[in-house]
Length: 105
Ligand SMILES: [Zn+2]
Image (tube, rainbow, N blue to C red; front, side, top):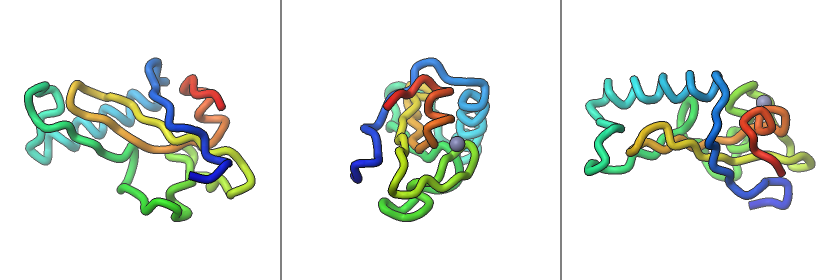
């Protein structure tokens, strides 16, 4: 983890955007035959949007909300959001959108 990446934060009060994104991933899990509401089932870890990015790649420092690449000279904010009892979404946001989700450096 580079010095311009903040420690991963857990979002507890999501914006409408994050709730909507989580809803899409909940529906996606259901289409795949998974039950993210089953506490006795496996924990599902999925990306906020798109596919899991390769650590250290350009996509790994691209804001999941606005799509802006955050170069190595600026802060990037990894986060996790528990969308359901058995579904954790992980991703990362630029400083502006991390602040909107209540994530602070
Ligand atoms: Zn952004």
